[in-house]
Length: 123
Image 1: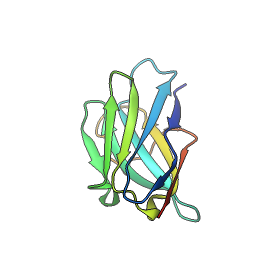
Image 2 (image 1 turned 30 degrees about the horizontal axis):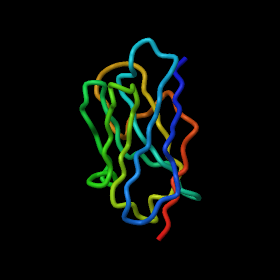
Image 3 (image 1 turned 120 degrees about the vertical axis):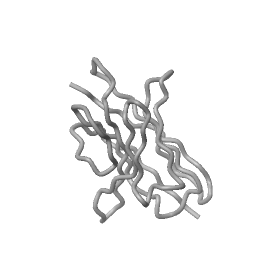
């Protein structure tokens, strides 16, 4: 059973940068599609970005420009770099993975979820 563990959430200042990481375990092959989502208090969960195991990325409009999704093959982690932090980035951030094969898009449904890591941005 694939398990996902996020880390890197923190309290940070407006304008700064933050890198979140997700470490998968319990897999025999790296998930073909993984993504980052977030949920702010009182709001629905939203997709940010997804990445295929071949490195192809997909970003939601809200994720374009300030978010960078990547796979660190040396550490076997999925990362999300957030630049120019804003108060509205305050949310619980979740890593997710999708079974199967094919395309990988930020709006695809995911089969496995981590427990989340909290990001709080203050001015």
